[in-house]
Image 1 (spheres, rainbow, N blue to C red):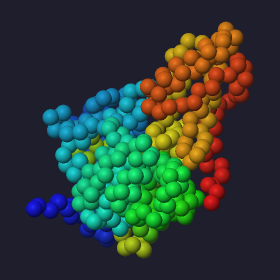
Image 2 (tube, rainbow, N blue to C red; image 1 turned 90 degrees about the vertical axis):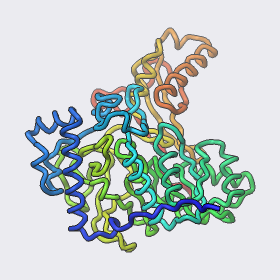
Image 3 (cartoon, rainbow, N blue to C red; image 1 turned 45 degrees about the vertical axis):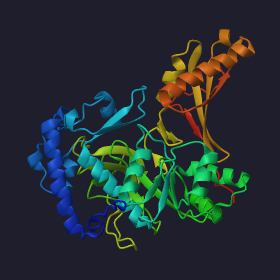
Image 4 (tube, rainbow, N blue to C red; image 1 turned 120 degrees about the vertical axis):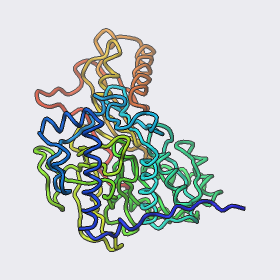
Length: 443
């Protein structure tokens, strides 16, 4: 009887001396820059604007000569304008939400998929997981990178994978209990919801086989980590990624829980001043910029993530020499993340203003209720609609909610308010009130 295939993680880059790592990074950067210049008209034009050619990149530090790329570039080249290879070499596409309803599309060839699996394996190994673990993947499957990314990475580790996907909380707990699940992958807020549900079902999470939680796709605090670990027997670990680069697995915490190691042999990190673009030294806080050093189907050069963090170059007590990023809790733009979905105020505005009778005055309120994020949108309506019947108002709220869900992909609570009731501003208006992190979770 054949045993399951166990992936042998390529661990050597995790412990490389800095100079050897720089040599590897330089070689890969030169390859990617050459391919992007020759095969992606967008990057060629950006480089020509700066009068930069691939031959100008001789060492990894020369990356600062290259142009930045941003999320808008993916929207403007939708769907496949940043692909460096033809579709007959692209084996998978993923997508995340964009600001106008069209998704941000990313592509992978088979080697890209293999790299993705590799970095997730390296992250899981650094956490302490192995082939004997049973890993429940409770991220959503489909165009979102979370579910399939962790799924194939955990399989490559040789672990047993339970592809639970999201939702159906009662079943999630049943699977953890009955299948002897030792690790779960999901958003931290959803896991707290699982804790609450388990308590109502009479299930003590501390008695389960669960030892690890791999949490990402949304910001979470140290207070949330402490809450999770206090109510379970698990070690709660952060995993970082974004679709534009690869998905989950760009960086992950090791068992030391002291920052997430960036797998910088594949993803080169920089920290910049978000206002000036100046590259900042390790240790200083700024915006994280990432360059894919190995991705072939869709290389990304100096991608501005808008995530605010800092780089720690001190060797971790685990022995890895890879730099670490501090936990990300803020962004330099107006995007917010709710239930693992990237949302822009402009998306909500698009959904609102496509409905006749609504006004361009709205407020977005984010709360955490019963340990789950909620999205409420208050929107003014015109005087004629304001005098409508209760049933008419309710029907309009449902129409708006449905329209918004089609564009953003998540359900929102819609509250229609009277004209002239929402705050006005002569300057830059604050559309979003994020009330989720004002108070740490009580013990």
